[in-house]
Length: 366
Image (cartoon, rainbow, N blue to C red):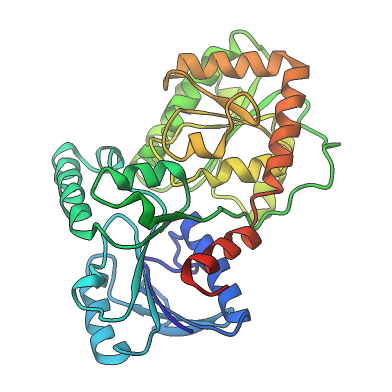
């Protein structure tokens, strides 16, 4: 089968994240099974216009503003009629392939934007984006959809998408679970915050929760790792520098994959306070390294954590409640070990092999 995949970014884009990892893993397996895959994505500085990546072709057109129109033009001129199936991935803004693609197509959502607009934009732009998303989601309704969590499925069903047409695939992780839980943790109890320092990730609330928890656990420390470019990252650095517990907080900036795995293994807890996620892949990755999570009760995170079994979901999304959960888990060694064991066991079931099997079945390839 020939598959044409419209997506905002590819795996080599400097801003690639979890969604692009999923795409790359699925596409690589499709190619290994004899299918042809072409990604039509936006360009970025220094990128090749076309290249082969792990057996599939990546074609880059336009930039983050023009990619939607440039993708339409490129398709009409060069790819019309080539594909047996078109996958339209929606990352905030759709390509509206249904208006010009005559081949069979399916939508792929990792998550909706919704409240994220108000974190990443000013109030006026956020409101415009929120209203626009509400409008165009209704225009996309009644199409077949693939997504990665029950939370996103529920979100989509609010906007005219038929639940029976929304299929969920398993998430996957390219980090192998540790062989056993005989892991050497940091000498001091350590909370980990992992991910780009963007407003919607709300790392400031993790710092606030840490400062409250440290009053109960005096040797507690916090490690923050992730891209530190942007205004919000500067705000986080200022908060750390002015904190009375600044000597117990490390901000490492962007780190390597090896360092990421090391931190997930050695830390005692990972805290995630995003406003919204598709799944919460960082939770599963940390679980695979023997580290349970404490998270806010939001879309995606309530999917990646089984409350009271593999981690803890806060009843209230605020630093006070988060700090209470952190202290409770870290002070109860038996409960902590139970959560860590369960989280590790579950992470072994969340694989790209399972994700690919789900994907193939939905596409009619198995």
